[in-house]
Image (cartoon, rainbow, N blue to C red; front, side, top):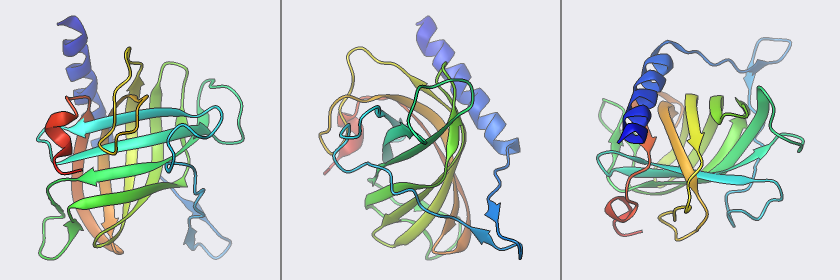
Length: 199
């Protein structure tokens, strides 16, 4: 019971921090924003040496985000260690951006890092910018703040891949096909069977 209360408090704090957090991007000498994708893993979860897996489900059962994380340049996790991720976003019910014709359509979205974030030894995750390609285009998403909790036993993703820890985070959908999107969703661990639907 105490663990569940702590997780709910952590998710609430993450949601509040995400509302106030900002994430920058690299700019060239002319001031143009640029993102070079790292193309890290995600296909064949756990196949990259030194990688670790985490997933989270949205509470209403609309989606699941499963990611394989890896340290940029290899090595061990310290304080504010650069991290990248790749994986899948399973969308069971569409997520609207708040206006007609935009949002995340149902289906499987392929996720990769476009700007590394940071992870610390206690599992705190911040400033990770992701790109998801899916049924209706390309979405840019940010995990401003999150946590990775170790699970025993590990859990299984909607695609059937084993070995996942828990990802608790507020995920902001910044753009879909280049248009601003004011949507966000929280993920944490629920029974995957209730979330995966037809996947």
